[in-house]
Each structure stands twice: as C-alpha cells, then as structure tokens.
Length: 404
Image (cartoon, rainbow, N blue to C red; front, top):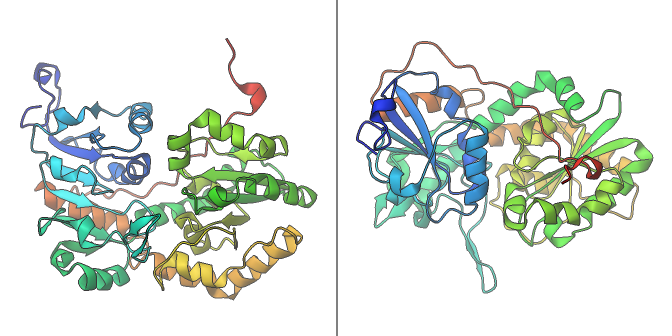
C-alpha cells in the first residue's frame, strides 16, 4: 500500500486519492461500533475509508463478511501495516500497535469504565477498559485520542491511568444518541419484527460468557417464551455477537430450536439491536449494556438471573442492577413486567440516561471534530445528522431455509 492510502498496484485504477481512514476490527462488536463513526466522514471526497482485521482478531470470518456485505474495502493486515494512515479508528486496543497513524479509540460497549477489576484463579483478570494494561504500551499511550462517554470516566481515568488523561475527550455516546434518534420510528421497527397490532414486544437480550443469562441457563429463552404465551406477547431474542461468532449459526439455532418452536423470534446474527430496542415494550436482560441503553430511553427492564459479574458502582448497568427487579421464573410474568414499568416510572430511566452520557445528542459532532483534527483536514461546514438505526433482520424460521 502506498503512502497516499491506495493499495499497492492499484494507483492507476484510482479516481479520487485521499487520506486513508483505517477501521481496525479485531471483532464484530468493535466493527459494529465503528460503523456509527463512518457516516460522519464518508461523504468527504478527501477521504477513503478501509477496514482490516488484525492477525489476532477474534472472529475474522464474521468481521470480513460484515464489511463486504456493506460494500466496504477489506485489506489484509499485512497490507494495512505497510503505510501510515491519515487516521486509525479503533474500538479495541487489540492489534493497535501494528498500525501507523494517529489513533482515535472509542468504547465498543456501554462506555470504557463498566467492570470492576478483579481476579480469580479460574477466570483471570477483568479490567475496566481504562486500565493502564489496556491504554499503555511501554508507558506510551496507545491512542492519540481516547473518547469517553461520561465525565465520571474521566475521573476514573485520572485515578487508574493518569498518563492517558491528556489524550482523553468526553464525547458522549454515539450509540445511545442513535438509539434516541430511532425512537420516532418505533412503529416501523415493530412492523419489521412482524407486529402490526397492539401485541406487546418483549425483547430478551443477553451477553456472552458462562456467567451470562444464557450461559448460566441455556433454557432461558424457552422459559420466557412459554411464560409470555398467556400474555399474547411476542418474545424477540437478541444475542451478543460473540455467541454467534464462537459457536456458529447452526449450533446456536439448534440450542434455541425449542424456544423457536414455542414462538420465539430471533434477531439475525450481527443485526443492529437498536431497532428492536426501540420497538420493545419491555426488555429482559442480564448484565449486557443493552439493558442500560433500553432503560435510558424509558423502556422497563426486568433483569435475568446470571452468574457473578462485578460492576463498577455508579455505572449505568450497576445502577440498573441495584434497582430493576429480578425475574422469578416461578411467578407469573406479567406482574413482574408491570413492576419493572413501575420502577421505570419512578425515574430510574432518567437516572440511567444521565449516567450513559455527559454530552447527550452531541457525540456525532464531537467525534467528527476529533477525527478531522487528527486527519489534519478542515471540517466540512455541512453537518451530518445522526441517522436512526437500520431495520432489524430476523433469523429465518425452519421452513424458510434454502434447500439443495
């Protein structure tokens, strides 16, 4: 790849030569988050955005398929390493030291400071995402800009990795801002999920790991779907991308087959979860950050039992865990959903929203400015409004799978 950002040998095919913006995608979750940033720059004729999956990427096939399905350019990592890019966009520090160019690091979940550092013999150590082991490489800060969602994270950073504070910017949460922008299209999202009447939609969303709601109780989706039958509600499942990447579509669908037979609707792997959240009347969730996003836009959340997961006090998911009711499978479901709505009505959602972002509605503008500063280019005068989330895609039901 040449210094102008054009792949080696392709210069004579090029129509416009601009600064290369490299999207670093070690896994599908990071890539999905960075997709929120691409519309802020992609209309600029001075820029060419490209994507690479580092050699130590966790789900290379999924990330590559994701890029190609959206018409993007996917470079082999050895090719991406050959040049200095105008900007490197990252939502994980994995593979970052191999790429050349100014780096903007953003969180790929509900902020960088969610989990309390802890250690067990069986599970190793979890860090907050703001820990020095994540942000420093031989005492050098890995990113030129570190985007934080909340002022609280800046305070945390000053305690656990003060060297990185000069590189930090509180930008708010672009994922949450896009979810808010999706709210007016609720009926459109409901129709995409197959609901055209007044049926309630219960979104069941889980993260990955043996500690998650699904990992600790594989029958969770069948149990909830059967419990919702008498309430004439549609149950929709949203699984963390890592579940699909690690176990494969066929196996996961097999695990969910009894729930699907009972009426469960499953979001297709790697579909945008925000449309389903905007459509939902209730959300049932483990400690996934999606639970906090849902609560932040006013949706009642009923928590799903899960294994021990340490959360930093005062973070959105931790506050939600303290106040939202916990589902009890032996009791009728509807009264418990109503209890979750009652808690939401007493101000929990507004509190969660305040914890999710210190710059509500501003993340796009702040991040765009930071990107252009790092690129060394003037920012275009025309603003880029945040678009609503795309329509959710559904996993085909058994009778609709292609044959032959």
